[in-house]
Length: 387
Ligand SMILES: [Fe+2]
Image (cartoon, rainbow, N blue to C red):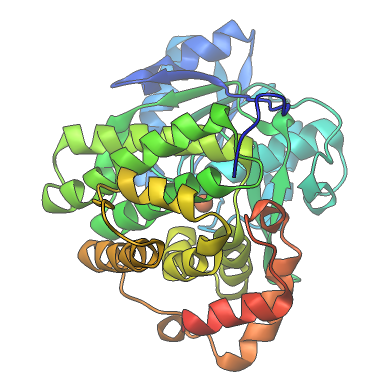
């Protein structure tokens, strides 16, 4: 993959405030947007940690009224988005503050889309299907992985079709991301591992994406470097704020990369899987990652060698084939070290499910930018290898 300077590429990002206590600026930012009443979107788990209350306090301090909406599942569903929108409209809110991981943040984007465009959330599936701008979105992520706070993606579960749909549009990039590493201290080890692996997948898929460019490469490579060294570190020292800050920063870098270069087959296949079995997104990605790399490797061996070097693999003297094998083994051992050991079979996937999963993955927007084009049979084989 050679990037010519003549290729047109764009790069979009929200205003980002990164650092300890940035969460307390939510009220100030609402005020900057002349907001009077914010819909605070969170979930029961995050509310329990106390972060949502702190953000609400900052709204009240700034004289902003609020209404809390927390009926959000781990994989946010279309009817939750519609219910949240009804509340937003009934309560005459004029801004949305999301506090939490990918689920409340994606649900908040969905609410913003429907509140500004009417219709049903599933109408906006795919790329650039939204016309009206959203109300101000102020996002405070509490996991280091999804990067919904900086991205132009929202993933919503379609409970009728049992699939997760991807909505991609620059209109849904939040106005402000208040990225506060302290909020990740309440994640347990497994959530830290799964969300961290999600971030690593974002960076790898962004770097080999057909839409990658020098504008995104710099962020993708920095993310791979930071995440591959700090994920083991945070497993060994879960209370190290330094390691948590690094992972939050790496996740943000990965988010800036993938939001602008889109993703690939891991995410297409993982969305299909996650909708089918209601599994955590990061776990789905982790189960597929090395198998998709194996499939993609020969399309861009040089790019994968650069990925290996940023994972601190000494590639000197190695053949291309040795590098492929080394990346495969490194990812397997990283997952094992982090405690992500399930295979598809362990999570209840049956061989007979694979054709349906593959068909849904083929229809996912993320497959478009995968570096190697994949037919249904290719996708089926990758799922089979991950069993
Ligand atoms: Fe992801």
